[in-house]
Image (cartoon, rainbow, N blue to C red; front, side, top):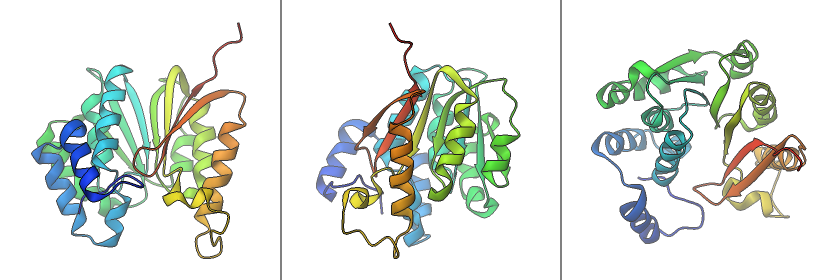
Amino acid sequence: MTPKGIGLSADVQEYLVAHGAGIDPIAQELIDVTAELGRISGMQVAPEQAAFMTMLTRLLDVRFAVEVGTFTGFSALSIARGLSPGGRLMCCDVSGEWVSVGRPFWDRAGVAHRIEVVIAPAAETLAALPEEPPIDLAFIDADKRSYKIYYEEIMRRLSSKGIILADNVLWGGRVADPDADLDENPDTAHIREFNTHVVADPRTAQVMLPIADGLTLITHAPDPQ
């Protein structure tokens, strides 16, 4: 089972990956191993999103990246592959069990030495980070109620040309559904609140992209002319 973008049929998803994203054997095996976990495998990023993050990391010449929510490590693999020489990625997660699934694939891809994993509540890990080195790229893909906390901690440490990537901002389309059952799915309200907070933040500029389940790119607002 390959994660697919919101609103895409299986045929269109397959065409999109074949003609743009591409999946190498190591990444494909990690996708397959994660799929064997069952329904929870839906937490894994889609192939086109992974390829986008690798390219963006490379274009930004990222030296220090932070990931909040690593799961089985596909997104970490994708970011680590795009790091500049000497660059490093710090992964924040609370489950060493899930992260352990990805470690052998990081090794095989030759990027394990670039990745540091911290198993602890991400809010505490981020709050303890020094201001130097600044964060060049951050990927937020963890518990939705804490998105604003992670965002604020990262913003304080974001480099001048740094980028924050916030995942699942379309939340299966439920963010735009006035009839969404917030009791059944309270994370819908958390994502809506986060999206509203970001777009109203005068410190930042952002664009929301319909990649996978929705990905918002956030950076510092340009200086007024």
